[in-house]
Length: 602
Image 1 (cartoon, rainbow, N blue to C red):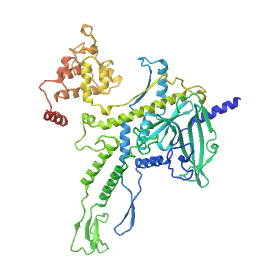
Image 2 (image 1 turned 180 degrees about the vertical axis):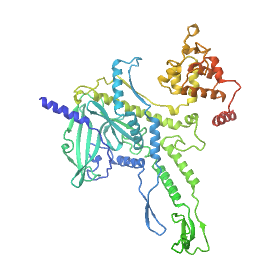
Image 3 (image 1 turned 90 degrees about the vertical axis):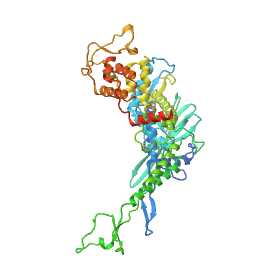
Image 4 (image 1 turned 60 degrees about the vertical axis):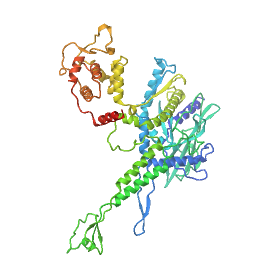
């Protein structure tokens, strides 16, 4: 009996120790050749033909161009496409999710002080995500998901750790779904084995199903000598001798996988639970962009310099040495051109026309995928200011917001699946749960980086007003506006030994952090600016403040409050640093232009 129990435990362990390998799911078979022919899988095979096509655009895989030469010969050349699909997917993925994002756990009751259990759960989750390089890999897979319409994640067990398997859109097959989420699925894994001189292709189908409120995972292995055919079912023991055909788990509240789909309805298959990629509704404009770019590239190649000379000029022998450089292909010999002489017949390349056409087409593509116009074009007038970026990215911002909703949802589902698996002690080598916590006792919070959509100058101005009003601590002000670490904040505020000691005594018992008039910081001696120890970052920041005051970008009173709050100087020294009030410098061109436009509008 003990041996039987241990055997069951081992099979369960083996079930969850296996990850999902990369698969090239090129399904064009017949009969039962396609995975969608499986009786458990009811989704239309055209959905996966669509996904395969999306990945071709993403990978920039297009057939060669066939053409006829001037002599009527059939020729072939490489198609020169412009891979804007990859560019757009990468751009969207980077502004939606990056390594600066943070996943945390909180108390669902909104208590200020979280419990010890949640703190320990947060530490466990943080370590698990770190071990899986989660933040970098999520952005990478999100990029592919944006192009294809979705992707999936599945936690599995590796020793006494939980790892995350990443599943592409062409590896994920939904079995059952409702209006909220996909609750059952099949995951396909392909491998190749060489037997003699023949390559055999194995397809492992891993089914996740609910049966009588129990979570059932079953495995089927198929073999074929054709990479495009799934083949016939064979015993699991051929490749996976320790893998059980069926494992039943009780007590789970959600599936052990999480599926991300792109926002918006699937207009290609209205009943499909799968998402659509950015390619699906932009193939016509993508084809036009690629064809235009190909024509432009071919015209550049064929428009190289050509000079017609009499054929005799190019004949060489011992008596007639080369008249032109023999290593060049610029010169073309023409018989009967004695009267023509040497003539340049190079045709001009239509650079402006092609450039304008491609630029216009890219703008149309930007609208199709939800990016603000100009997001993928180089600005002719130089780098845009932060204010321009914020104001001109309304469409990008809205698109990002839609994606964030789906990203937050799938991360929430993944975290719950991780803790579900972590609490199943029988599957670990120690036969003890890695971590146990109730399903509803924690709240998953995802913090996203919004730096792209923040006008830093406006933020500095607003934060300064809040700080002077006494509503923001000094350390928070410095962190938000100067991107300082805790150690750098301490150095700026003079908490380090190498910084002159400050008099923290404030009249009338007021806290110096909230004093709005007079010197916020006072020296115990009369140190001058030359005697004060300052690092490079402090000096640079101080110079920037002086320049902003001189160029009328920052009010002098605000600058004084900022200097006395952020540096070891009193108000008198701040005035001395800022110099004569009559001193001015020419504002930057962009700022001057903006002011002129404002005056004209007034």
